[in-house]
Amino acid sequence: MKPEAAKRQIRAIKGVRDILPPESALWNRVEQTARDVFATYGYGEIRLPIFEETELFARSVGSETDIVSKEMYSFFDPDRDLEDLVEGYISSVRGKGSSPNILEQYVGAGFALLQWFSTRDPDTLTGKPRELALALREKASRQFSETTLDEIPEIISAFQKPMLQYHREFRNAISVAVSLRPEATASVCRAYIEHGMHTLPGDVKLYYIGPMFRRERPQKGRYRQFYQIGAEVLGQSDAPAIDAEVIEMLMAFFHRVGLTGCKLHLNSIGCRDCRPNYVEKLREALLKVKGQLGSDSQRRIETNPLRVLDSKLPEEQPIIEKLPRIGEHLCPACREHFAALQEQLKLRSIAYEINWRLVRGLDYYMRTTFEIIAPGLGAQNAVCGGGRYDGLVELLGGPATKGIGFAIGTDRVVLSLFTPDEDFWLPPRPQPPAQVVKPFTDDDVLPAAPVLDVLIAWMGAAAYPTAVKLARRLRGEGLSVELPAEEMKLKKSLGLADKLGARYAIIIGENEVASGRFTVKRLVDAQQRELGEAELIEFLRSKP
Ligand code: ATP
Ligand code: MG
Image 1 (cartoon, rainbow, N blue to C red):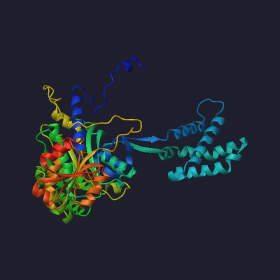
Image 2 (cartoon, protein in one colour):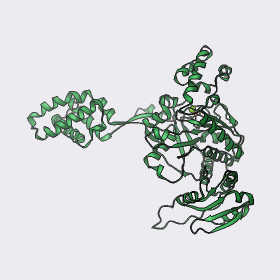
Image 3 (cartoon, protein in one colour):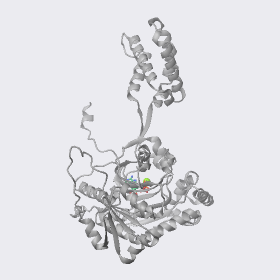
Image 4 (tube, rainbow, N blue to C red):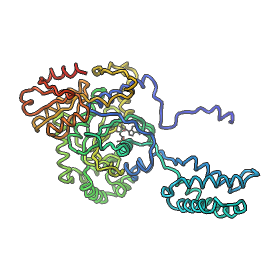
């Protein structure tokens, strides 16, 4: 190493950073708050790989999006063993090196290659490499075993040309294109399919915490390695109550973490039936004003007209304001879904603003989209983005599945909470009620399934608002609660409570709403009691 090179100071790569104490303590608090809050809504943690096949993101996020087309960190990851063989083979063919035993090396590498082929299924290869593999295998089985040393030059000349010619193609064929994940919803869906999670009872609710990677222009609140806390609900229902509960959970998180003044922006971007019509109308309208738009927007008229709505250029704002709005072009089913979601949010006293320009950067979204904006962050003020993505699991080769989720940008949440001059980054955190954790024994190495404290079985539309309020109270006490999004027969909800391993079911029908007393059923022995709300909370808290 040259002396100057040795002295050069190595720094963190552009766009990535170290998180030091005391800021790291705030990071832990933010992440722990998410774990605590999400657990009360019945979510379990999924830990995902940091890198995946590139195709996973190309197919789900969309190959035309900025994220996939220019922001991913991608590389080819070849099969090492085979690559070594091919390298050995090639260098021996080229006669590189001064070994006196070139022929021996050559034969050795050739045999190894053939052996490798004979253990591989040529169907996993395509194009020329496949032809080559088949030819080699054929020769290996028919000729090579009976080959004498004299015949080797002949075989060499037969293989030499194609091997050299197809070396590169060959390497690609034995390589996997992989990328550092730019987001995690695609991975969650991949895992959902891979582990057959659609057979699990109820909706599958998962959360993840970890780094994401996008090659963006670094600035305050925008990094190349950044962190997200995300959650997803996958299942058979797309009831607006699911969307509303996801949003309620988010707001509970922001409230608990102490980020005040957050605004919820909401939109519906329609579905496969109605969005294409709207996009065409939008494109027509944009073509009429093309001359007044900047070059980015002009390009997007062709590639992705919805993205024009995202433009922050001041001179484009008055033009965008006059463009057709998706809300006026939703199909009846989407319109109904959006209206019902807003009813659900009102029922939960969650304030929102409809933002018809909220389109999101990922292809897979449909219907509900939302974003949370925090004060004091300047241009990078979105602290969370999310939406519905029915059909994504199917697109990735899984069963027909509905889905909704969000991702919180942890960097920005921390930025907006952190005040270096104040001692406030470690405020005493309200402790959830202590859980009794049994010590592990030899035959109980794995903890049991995540605890579900309560399932609320509600019957009749009149019981639903009471159920929603009670669920929120109980969750606020640190209890984990499952609230079915759609009405079920009592027998069915008790069955679900059993399958989910709930300890108690609370039954709310019209009588309970009228009397203000609820039936609590302990599921192990079916013992029941009737309690008022305060007694009920006391009872559940004292029975860990
Ligand atoms: P933006 O419009 O700010 O680029 P986005 O639409 O690309 O956000 P999503 O893909 O929805 O963001 O990710 C969800 C959240 O992750 C964002 O709201 C933001 O808080 C955070 N986030 C996204 N990209 C970055 C980044 N490069 N650095 C820091 N945080 C990010
Ligand atoms: Mg972005």
